[in-house]
Image (cartoon, rainbow, N blue to C red; front, side, top):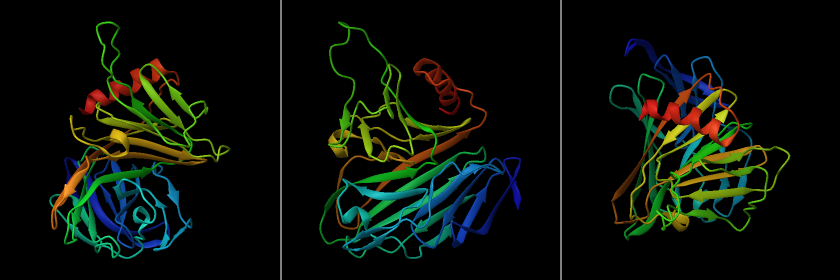
Length: 311
């Protein structure tokens, strides 16, 4: 154990979700758990001594023609656009890991046998409870492939996903659209789990509602959040003006079905040459004691005040 920005920090081996080869990193404020048994996966994130804000899906399985894929829970890296079985290539084998820099772990699995792409996640704590995740995808084929990095975070059930709307502008001063909203064939905009306010779009979990719902946006504000109880999880990610994004222009998506919910970000689509690599970065932050209202205005004001503190 050592001092990290004035706080006790450490890395230690733990068992989590029945996975025996996990590593817990803490900076004294928050702690994050990664596993080297499968993945690359981040399986836990929360305040020291607090609950895991990430979802846990131990035991669940999806059968594909390429084998069994397991969600496990937590955070993973895929390539977009989504396709079956390509997106569900099994990642159930051990990954190599390496301590990097002052306080980080790099997780590198073998290249996927079926696709010949190699994924990698580097997880680093910042000393104030925040996490920086660097996602990298390398094309090991002999030909170029078009793909985007797709960072998917399963959240603990019972909360609400928060996507900021673009700033309001009155007519006729503003005549052009500000961004796209993307719907899937199974998206039902009358579903009570979806809420479209003037300042926020909200997606709630409901274990009684098994039907899937999904929305996507061009999120130029660069953040999305998840509020569960009085704990707020925020992820920051980039938006590149003029770039081509998957799924009709989405860099931010939310999916829910029953108690399951994912908060997702995506990089631009890239024509990736052989041996070339794309990189996609997310920054995570946690806030405790967030007594936000549930209405559009009050919830926005509470969350926006916290976002401004870390920008």
